[in-house]
Amino acid sequence: MLDVLLPLHGIGGRGDLPVPLWLAVYSAGAAVAVSFFALAAFWSRPRFEGTAGRPFDVLTRVADHPVTRAVLKLIGVAALALLLGAAWFGDPEPSRNPAPTWLFVWIWVGIIPLSLIFGPIWRLANPLRTLAGLVRRTSYSRLPGGIAYWPAVAGLAGFLWLELVHPDASQPRVVALAVTVYALANVAAGIVYGPAWFAVGDSFEVYAEVLGRLAPIGRGTDGRLELRNPLVGLATMPQQPGVVGLLCLLLGSTAFDGVSRWSAWTSLTAELSRPQHLLVATLGLVVAVALVAALFLLAARTTGAARIRPGAVGTAGLPGAFAHSLVPIAIGYAAAHYFSFAVFQGQAGWLLATDPFGRGWDLLGTGGRGIDYAVVGTGVIAGVQIGAIVLGHVLGVVSAHDRAADLFRRRELRRAQYPLLAAMVAFTAGGIALVTAS
Image (cartoon, helix red, strand yellow):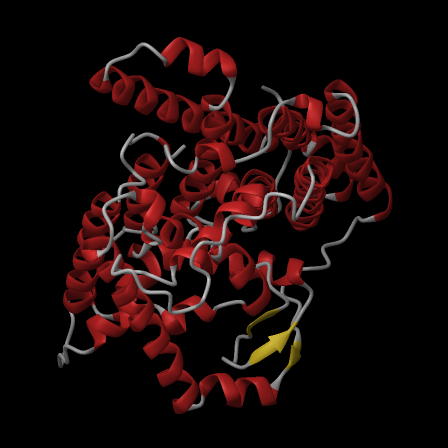
C-alpha cells in the first residue's frame, strides 16, 4: 500500500495464524455452507422484507434538532479545513504529517464503525454537502437519467487507485491535491444539481450510506429514526446496478491489496520502473475487480434459472436483488484487512496531531511518543481477521436466503441458491487466504 504505511497494513505471514491456514480456510468455508443448509431447512419465509423497526422519538428529536445539525456541520467543515491545512502547509515528510493518516485511516477506515454504530450520520456532517449548501439557488438542474450511483463508483475507483496503486499516495501534497480536487468537483456538482447529487455522486457519502444500512439505527418510511434488526435495514437497500458496481469494486480492491502484499507479487514487481509499476498495478486492480464482479454476476444470474415470483425483481435484475448480501461480506473483508492497520497506524494520527503544521508545537503533549505495537498480538489480529470474514459471509448468506425466500417458490428455494452459495464459499476461502498468506 502506502510506502510509509506498508509495514502496518495487515498482518504478517501465515505463521501468525492460531491454526494452520488450510484448516482455517476449510473450516470457514464449511461454516458458510452449514449455515446455508440450516437456513434452507428452517427458514422458508422472508422475515426482513418490509419489517418496521421500533420508533426512537427521543433520538429523532435530538438528531433533527437545529443545534445538533449545526454542530455536526461545523465539525465536518472544521475537520476538512484541518486536513487540507495540514496536507498543504504541514511538514512535507509523510512520517511527520498527520494528513495521510487522517485520510486513509481516520476517515476511510473510520467510516466503517461510525456508520455501523450511528447509521446515516455521515450525511449530516458531510462538509462538501454543507459547503455546497452555502450557495443558495431557487432551482437546480435535474440529474441525468440512469445516473444511478455510477458517479460515486467512479470517484471511489479513483480513491482506491490512489491508495493501492500510486506510489506517492502517502505524500502530504499528493493527499492535499487529491482531496482538493475531489472536494471542488463535488461541491460544484452539488451547487448545480442540489443536495440530490451527494446521495449518488459523493463516494464517501454513498459508501457510508451503504454501510449504514447494517446499523441498528435507521430512518423509517415516516422519516423517524428507529431501532431495528440490522438485517432488516440491509434489506431496504436500493436495488441499483451502481450498488453492485460499488460493492464489487470494494471486494475486488481488497483482494488486489492482499495479492499485492504477497512475496510473489513484490518479487515480480520489485525491479519495475515507475511507469511500469503504475501500469502493472493498475491492470492488477482492474483484473481483481473484474474477477470478483464476474463471479458474483455469474452466480446471481445463474440463480435466475429457477422460476421467480412475478414482479419480485426490480430493474437491476437478480444481481441488484442480491447486492445487499455483499454488504456484510465487504465489511468483514474491510475489518479483516484494515484492523491492524487501524490499530497501529491510527495511533500516528493522534501523535502527529500535536504538531499538525510542522511548526514545532506540542499541543497535545504527545511529542516524542511512538506507536505502541504491543497493544494487540498477532494471534488476536489473526483471530479478528478470520472471525470478521466468516461472520460477514454468514450474515451475507442469511441476507441472501431471506431475499431468495421472497423471490422463489418454496420447492425451488434451496436449488436456486446453490450458485450464490458456491460464490460465497469461494469468497470466504479466498478472503482468508488473501489476508493471511504471504
